[in-house]
Image 1 (tube, rainbow, N blue to C red):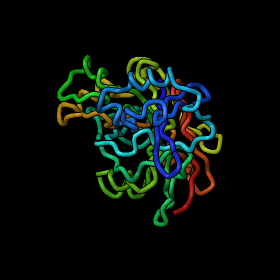
Image 2 (image 1 turned 45 degrees about the vertical axis):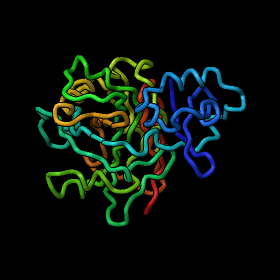
Image 3 (image 1 turned 90 degrees about the horizontal axis):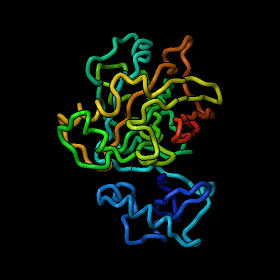
Image 4 (image 1 turned 30 degrees about the horizontal axis):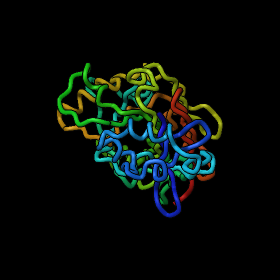
Length: 285
């Protein structure tokens, strides 16, 4: 099942995608929570799918007509793994980590598909990072790797756009990773049962103005989805709606000679096999 969030008048709505149509759950199932996070908290994904399968024609809208929003704009936690592809660690002059490098993203950094990535006035060192993102669907604490994937409700795509100069001012990356309007997320949530277990073996590609910049496979992660969830859950309880960005492969802009920075007018696309394409333009603040 695939779920999208979209603008409906001045509000947000969610729907189940059915090829070139979306079943608006506010019409097909108004008794259900009307956010993806709400569906996960109440364990209502199955009910949403059933409602969509039986929806009347009036509940269906054309997918292409929608302005999409982030699948979950308000995650309880947005956890990110850095240097999770060996070649990316090497291109930045770092050793492959022995443990996951973890940082967090803020809610205000998240934007939806098609929304402009904002290059701030105070820096022009705006870089792209295409990533797989896992969405937690169950509350878990201190799970082992064998249990960890049972906590994943589904997957989506993330572009961890980063202001490199601010990232590198200290050993902590938080500031460079959290400028407002720099974290595209979407275009849709795909339930885990539609994808390989742990999303292993999927091609991931990032294109800037049509040129391939990153071209890798999720099997090359240093810490796969299961091991990352298990590691994080040793320290903190993971909850429905938590997001886990699993790191970016090599090919980022700062490591190129000369460096390639995103600029206003650019279009960046992140494509992950079986999930879709996340496209965003770049604009100045």
